[in-house]
Image 1 (cartoon, rainbow, N blue to C red):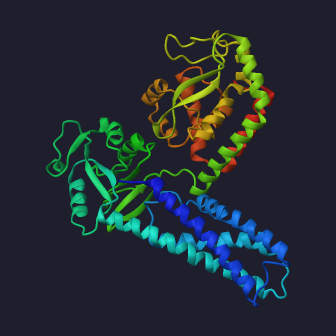
Image 2: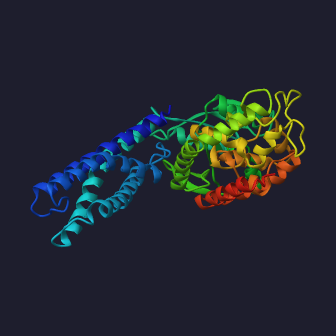
Length: 471
């Protein structure tokens, strides 16, 4: 059983307290020692800096650990990784503190500067690594004893699955994987694994099995290793919030982004989901929240204007909500300023067009400048959406698109966005064919994701808003 949020909270509390302790210890040494006197010129400035450090520095360290991805996947780390992460973060963080807090202080010799940064880095590393090592060690022991486990299933029930399961079962220490059974690739087939494992269903039931059984990891154990075959299997589940691994053999071919991992002596190929480095993922999320809050505060007069405009344009509510499919296939409610007459979809889902009679006059104005989308800043703050990402669609249209283009599910690996490369380059889609046409732009975005690309799309979106050139 996994308690990811609790595990992350342990690291955060430990990092906060050790950062506070480091600042107190270093300041005590600096005031009591005759060797260095770099933290103060006079007592008044010393105490200002001292108390500012107490408030600011622990928060700084927690944010730095977050940005460098050290609260990401807390159950997938080793003590050696913990050592490397802590050393690198201590060096980077204390170098920044040195330049902002210490460098401009008066010193008699530069040796005091050298001593100060060595003291800061050494004390911080020792104090922060001890609780991190303790937390990680306890987590590893819990995994090996079976107290913590990952619900896992095999895709395929042949010799590979049987052999690998027996390897795991015969190990003295638990791998942390709780094998719940297997999914048969060929419908109504008899599999060797049925003698030792539960058959949970067929490949067509895979997504529902993952959801119902709360699966954390999937291990592909198919006897068929052709690249196109493995790609097809991966495409069905790569957008779900799970780990995907592949049992290798001499004929295994690396496709996509895979890395070799050791599962306590059992080698596996891991299919990685991360389209962005962890630090960029975290920076993107911070940008999303901070810019959304700023936009909502600055845009209060605009919100008032649009509210009055919608209310006067036609009868009905000001805001319109609709169920959409987001990251990992999760459903959420998207919010917009209402741009259509009430009951516009009384006969079922229907996409709009340029001359759609259901759109109000004020709605046409909002759509041209994308202003109907701005209530979605709330969706961004909630975590359902991002500022930049593929536009979220309804399940009704996703089902139609995936029949023609199965790779559409690739878009569900990231949060949908208020704006997107597809929205900038193509605009609103009027039918499924145009949705598929717009898809290529969103796939280009996903394959080239970066903070720089996000900023570029935001600039283009602002240009569309001010020029009212949206399609």
